[in-house]
Length: 581
Image 1 (cartoon, rainbow, N blue to C red):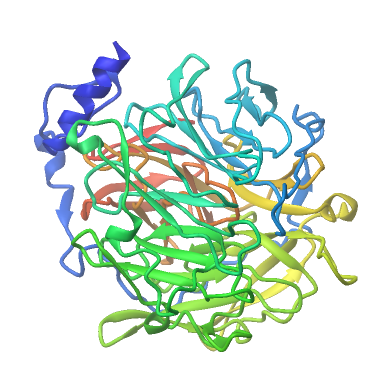
Image 2: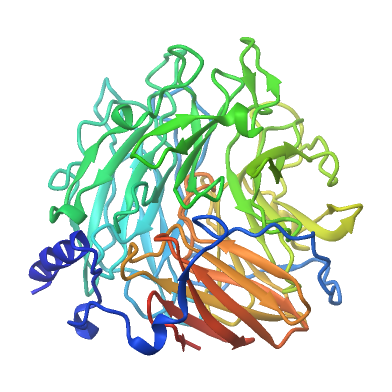
């Protein structure tokens, strides 16, 4: 029955009708009449961005430190994420991915490892985990992973990204389709994720590059053996909307790997796919180990299925590497995308290597176009003793503004601080957001692990965020936000006409204090890791939030004023918010 449903689902998407969970599917392809008036096209831009004055949120009583270590009694503290480089001369460590594998509304965790089978842990609803009976085995030399629904059947599938040695043929990248009831099937060859050039790959992302209602896969390339050139990036285009459950590799056809640096390819550590310039199309950022070769790349979607590299034009490059090519501060390991000053325009963070500041690019309008400027020094970032990898915007104190957390690793050389880093948003000073570094938790011993992957979730849906950090040759770390008196709101989006995971959506949240924040639904960015489907926002003292979703189709749907301290499912086209908790 499930296989029949998948074929029908693909045909429905090809006709622009979307699809639903089999148990709740409706044969009516049209929106209900009473909700049609809640959906309208943007009159501003295809994706409806609105630049606003930077907003000062109402601060609540500060909690210092903001997190407590909560790995104990979680059920995963004994698993060691083994990591080795194989025969590749590279730095790095394991990632982590989260998603709701069994559709019980709670995020589960997958931990890859290079030396043995990775582990899938199932959440019991309290934030405690048990090992799944049928964890996808994954390849040897597995490093990164992504949970997403590649066939729009409402089950989270798992892509495991790994290295592949040419001499021994060890390792590869594999994808496992979730069949429900804890069963996974390796469909790598069946759906066309094959013939990957040998070499090391860390990270990937998924998004809908052509807005056809299914998710495409981007996998960054790092190195092939001992080559002094980077490994080419890959783009697998989903054919589901054509009624076929398979992918076709089209990186060259679509314009990836066509940089302005001749034949030089970047050594990619991080991949983010999101709408950089707010034109309603998914763009791609490749975060590269710039000190080795080419700088970061920003591929802007042209709307015809192709991309043009425009990092320098966007303002995302500003310095030069040892080979004389323009670069962006070197050694980008992770990318975060959000809105630091609540002005309605996106901002970009790029984690960095020891003695170089984390990069902060603030969005601004120039002749109607979004560009970026480097504001790292202006907002309080300084050269750091941290070697930062995974990075995310977070709001543990529920005051509505964006704080920052990053995973820090022990550098190969030098006596540097490897403590995971937390930057507290202190508010505005002459229009700039100011950040102050504090320890994320009082248990420094745990924070000094060799950390790489980092994702954010709410494991028990209590409104206090959790941060899951993967550590090399050690158990993972889980940080849970200390309770505050700030209110919160949590959303989970479900696409119908858009891809089922609603990747590419933007949630606009306006609290009664007058501040508005926009949260971006994407999968990828943080080093070798993938994100929760839940979108969290603090609200400070506000008890309600006006909620609007800009779907990947460009449709703007209003869900009205929602009460704080609840978890909501927002389904495309419904016009109504369903309370999960």
